[in-house]
Structure formats: C-alpha cells, structure tokens
Image 1 (cartoon, helix red, strand yellow):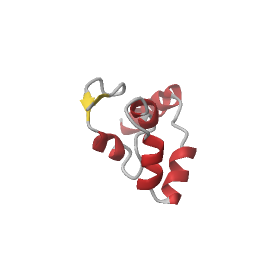
Image 2 (image 1 turned 60 degrees about the horizontal axis):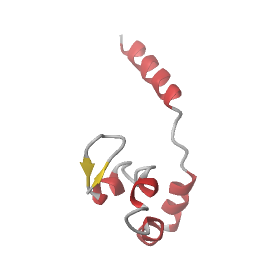
Image 3 (image 1 turned 90 degrees about the horizontal axis):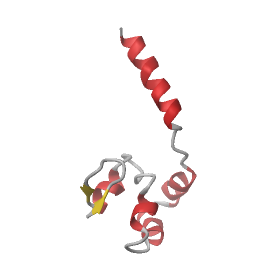
Length: 77
C-alpha cells in the first residue's frame, strides 16, 4: 500500500498499474521508486510499445484541464 498524492488515501500497486486504463499512473515512478525498482518492473510488465507510450506521456496542464471541463459543462447546458 502507498499513499496516493492524487487521491489522498492509500492504494495498492495494482491500482496504480491500471489507473490510466492501458497505462500505469503517470506518477507511479515517483511514488513507488523509494520502495523498489519500479522502472525495471514496468519495462518487464509492459509491451515495448506501451513502455514507449508511458515514458513519452505528457499529462495535461491543470489549467488546460480546468478550461476543458468548463467548456464541456457549458456545452451540456
């Protein structure tokens, strides 16, 4: 178990591995690296394509995400 900085409570490694459906959570290396060699583990667990997708993933800027949520809410009205 590890305290998740995004959720604010403890989660298992299995949750972190599935958080983004086909990819692990973008923070998994930062959170789990003090516990064990998570990068080597991920390289073994993920296909080469998914590993490349994971290491090249760029999370959206928080401000941009908020603007998108506002625009989505306006469109629903």
